[in-house]
Length: 270
Image (cartoon, rainbow, N blue to C red; front, side, top):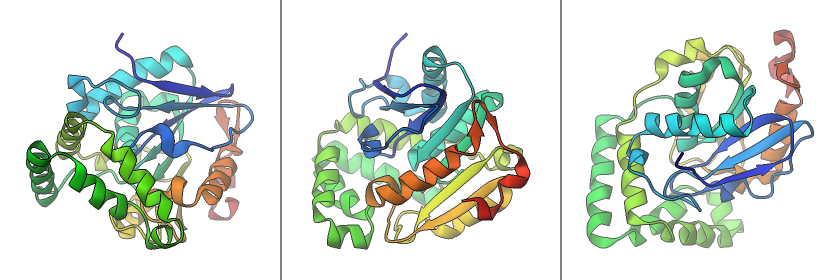
């Protein structure tokens, strides 16, 4: 089996971490594992330490490849933690093995497919980086993905994100842009999600309109929506302490592979 780079911490119920585009699992660095949970961090094909494969041009195909990998590591009830493109992959994985998903944390993401305008924008990016390389993309995304507060108070983070993007191959960027442009809408899945789901959106997010996650929150039965102050698109990097706290509280609802009664999953619970 062709493999991806995986990092594993802890033992217990598996928690799958799915990173944002065009970064890698480094965005989860510093997370302290919660007792009785096993953290599994994955680098997508062409990002971080994972080799690039042709199937990276399709998000459903990427999900199909990830599922047997995580089953080989720990074939249990999974909790998915996906940010941005990692959220898109979370929906694809849920579609494939919904009975094995017992919880989700969806960050700065949504279930919709690309609009016509977004598809055209991605095609424009593909053409430009094919001719000029990815330097311009590293410059723009390093500022677009981070909130104003982070850019002003933690300027080193802008340079860190920029450097990480610049180390990524042009082909990896192109494959992922194609995958996101052609991803299917998973809106029909929302009403079928009846597991505890935590939704997080940054108050300074310039990529995703909060209203989109509010609509998603209304359609997912056991969901809770949190607005994270002074954070843009990359909440785990921009507000690591708040993210760690919310994740820990969410996971503490679980006992082994079983989550607590629905009545305890109220908005006051977090």
